[in-house]
Length: 443
Image (cartoon, rainbow, N blue to C red; front, side, top):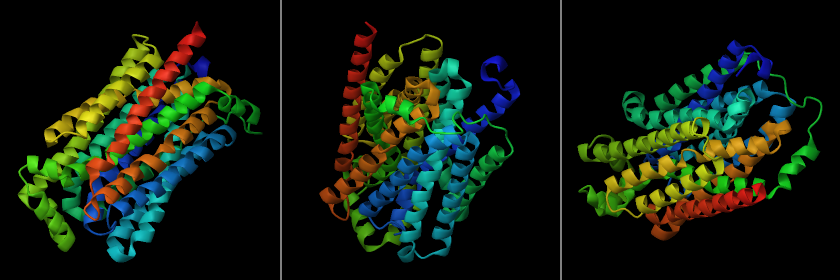
């Protein structure tokens, strides 16, 4: 991006891009946090059952939705520095609060503080997402979709990194050290934002309501946003439930040579014994390691899909809408086969297929949203994200509530994950409708 085009020195643009990429990497770490630590929190009775996990996810989703509703106007009126810095600071407070809850409060008394921290984490982390994407869309306006796909590779890196590291970190200092480490990393983002110079807000005097109304009158906006609703719910559900699925599903445990009934009885009678099994018994550690690495494999596949889509969009000039539709089809196929598989290997490798298909969907959708009304790109991005991330209110919690309804106290995560398959199928149909609509308008 040239200095003439952006009106800012190239060196400053590089610093801002680095901050955006670092922020999205941290968001990837935060997104992997529930999938990596929720099973431990549940076994330790900090979250007593799948219904409590579902409520945790629902509260987190409320924070995310508020972040997207607020951050767009803040970006356009007050500026990216405020939106990104405040979001990162709130995330720091939430992560520190989690650390205090699991180290200073007994499990029976910690549920309220954990729910509060979940709300704050959803608010802060997703303000970082909205700001980071708006910043890259502003700097790399000429190659927006390709640049946003590159940005979200950092999300995949974060999503993959935490599951690979979390067991060794827990062995050294428990969950408290996990949260303390993530708090320290996020503090670095706060400091980077504090000491960097950002572009001026697009609309410092007033919020352009008339122009924002153009978005709501556009059928393309609603098709894009509704598809993103399904996508976000499906992707986050995979990240937050796949470890639990691999550690608890009877068919998968039998495929790994374990007695699911015995583990279920252990869960009912001795939660500490179940924790010890997954943390110290070689067979249990093997299952937990395989589950966490499967989540990392999914994240690496997501990363590979975004790298491939960045090349396809930036070099081969593939049509963005065609790429979205093909990605949705591949995602749906992978999820159907992963969540009906009878072996852990089947779950892992079909999730890799689904992750690769998911790769282009989120960043390309954000790029298309920012082009709908370029004069208020920050607001356009945050509004389509607001609708999209509302999927967090429905789909990940639905997995937990369906699991509890179908399996009682033991849960039936396999049946709960049918909600994810349904969401992915609807996403494909919405992307197909959007592609057909835009092609007919072009002709």
